[in-house]
Structures are given as structure tokens and as C-alpha cells.
Length: 282
Image (cartoon, rainbow, N blue to C red; front, top):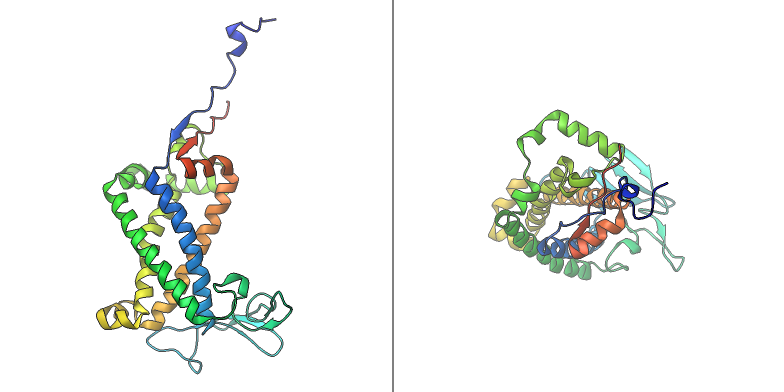
């Protein structure tokens, strides 16, 4: 039997967890400001959508025109229609009951909108103000990403990562909830890089420019912008689809944080310091 001070008694003990400085201050600031900004933009955008809950392609769209997407109600039910497919959504979308027991027929319920009661003018004011917050913050973050080595250090996709076998392995690991450990946990995986690059450099700029294309003032200043998207109603449809993709991204991101260690991940995004998960014993 070995003595307590015998070095051999601790030979099999795992090494203490190592901490690394993973998220720099600009990343953390932009993350939290963006989270609040996008939530307010989504909720105020749903209020604006409630004014005319139908989407079209092309230059024009009104009640008499065919909408490829619509949220509506009949005398008894609420529904969502996508193309020719109609889904009953009574109690959720199209027809729902508010907290006072009053039945409403707005597309989205009050708890999902800003303001909670129907007020198109206020919804637009909220939306336009935080759209500027998003646009300015995104521009500054993209410049810092490009010139502050965040792109090169964290998001650059190296040649070996483009290999289909490498991408497929990352897909399988995510599907099996096998998260990287040790030194590998300090780096973004290929799916993370695809997601972050797509959101930062494609999806968020697309949301900003489609929003500008719906503005009458910008139509006068940049008339070519409407043509880029194939018409104002097409820009509105793309804007709505982009919002849906952002909601999906947020949901997946939130679930991954919960499954991969929420305390460690949250601490890293608040302080910058991340504790590397230890390697599994062979």
C-alpha cells in the first residue's frame, strides 16, 4: 500500500484543467450587443409583419395578388399557408387568445412582438433604431475581424479542412454530440466556421441591404438596390426568410452551448477565459 506522499499514488491522476484566453473583448462586446439587438429587431419586425402578413415575389403585392406565404384566419381558425400547403395554427398564429382572454387575429401573438399591442408606428421606430445599431456594430466588427487577425486566427478555413472527409467527420461528431476536448476545443470546427462566416459576412449584410431596399428614401437614393433583389416585395420576402434563418442559427447555437457545457461557455463569453475540457482517458 503506497503512502499518501508517495508520488506513484498520484501518477494516474488527470492533469489540472488548463485555461486559455479564447474570446477577446471586441468579440464579447459584439456578441452581447448583437444578441439584444437581433432580439429587438425580430420582435419589432414581427409587429411590422402583422400589418400585412403576406409575402410576394416581384415589384408589387396586395391583398388581391397571390402570396407565396401568408398567415391568416377564418371565422374559427388560424392558419399558415406556404404555396398551396395550408397548416392550421389556431391558438399559435393567425388566431390566438391574449392574457385578458380576448381572441385576436393578428398573425403573431403579442408576447412575440414589440410593442405587445398592435402599434405599427412604434414597431417601425424600434426596428429602424436598432437596425442602425446592427449596421454600425456589424461594420466595426467586420473591420476588426479583417484587420485584427480574428479572421486569420479563428475563422480562416485551411486547405485540409475543405476535404469532404474532414467535413463529414465534423458532421458526424455533431450529430453524435461528440464535442472536441483538450487542445482541439480551443479551435473552431469547420461547421462553426461555416456558420459564423455565413452569418457575419453573408446573412447579416443581406438583412441590412434588403431592409434598405424596402425604404422609400433609399429607393430614391439607390434605385438600383431594388433591381438587385428583383423588386421591393422580393426584398421583403428575402428579409423574412433571412430572419427565419437567424432564428434557426440562434436555436442551434443555444442548444450546442447547453450540451457542450453552459457554465464554461458562458464564462468564456463574459470574461474571455475558457477552460479546456480534459482529454478522455484511453
